[in-house]
Length: 397
Ligand code: PMP
Image 1 (cartoon, rainbow, N blue to C red):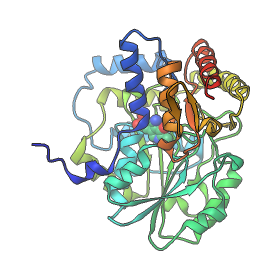
Image 2 (image 1 turned 135 degrees about the vertical axis):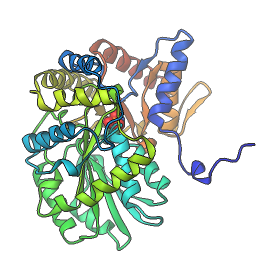
Image 3 (image 1 turned 180 degrees about the horizontal axis):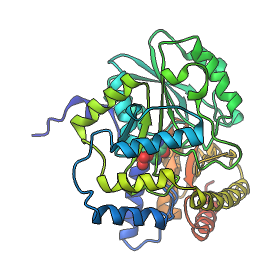
Image 4 (image 1 turned 45 degrees about the horizontal axis):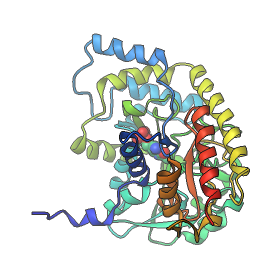
């Protein structure tokens, strides 16, 4: 008996997760694999946040919580959104979930009807399209280009909108390109949305703090967009808390209520202990976050320089997050022994199996000429990993 639901045939396993799994399998065979595929800080969660979690256990925070999260956690989110983003919300507009990933799923399931179009600028984070497909919507891609540092223009947005467009989803800072939209660029997109009041906007700001150039800006600040923008954020990236599983969304009340309703049927709420620690993270100062970001910045400079020294790569200069998305198409249609590289999928498998470095194929993000490397790894591993990539790319003839 193998009768799975049809929806399973329409989605694929995230390439990010697949590459990490393949890398682990090689490691288990004793091979020294350098993992540049994974999207998580290599730092430990700051000690003061870990202490808050230990205290929460001892204080008895071990029961079910309200679906949307404890009131004081939601109040801490409201405080953070005011402090960092100048956005005004009430706790009823906040839903805390098991990671930003679940926030995204809650919103997609809340607003997308079968047949609705969802506009997604490329490159985009792997799960966006798959969540839309699970909701029986149609992902419609708006292509970002290396020339425009992988950002879309207001003209492109305007041209992509049709009466079927229901939702627009994007991340800034962006996974996988690292692109950050400036206030002016967001204002340009906002002016287009002002003409199309039927479109909801998901603004995924999970990499907010990992921004090397300017101040983070949210599209929710423009005009009346706060009434149809869902801001998504969480603790995973900025506070190095991927395993703790806490994301949050801030939304118009009717969307927040819908997300609460959906979440109540799937996971109830995220972990009580994580929620208590989140208050400490959200209310505290950002010194340890800034220290981690300073370290990422050094690595970005190194990786950018090292990749630029590899013949033929076209390298973007990301302003945020911790990824590089070089165009590797110069190596397509080349071979090493009996291995022929047709595309970025083949190249990422070649780098895994030969160079023993795991990266992610750009096809996972609709950027077919690229591969994604994460520099959330030690300088030593980055140096070794990029040297190996250079050596094995040089063998392709
Ligand atoms: N959005 C983006 C753009 C991401 O890169 C990630 C994690 N890789 C998430 C959302 C989900 O984060 P989490 O569920 O860990 O909060």
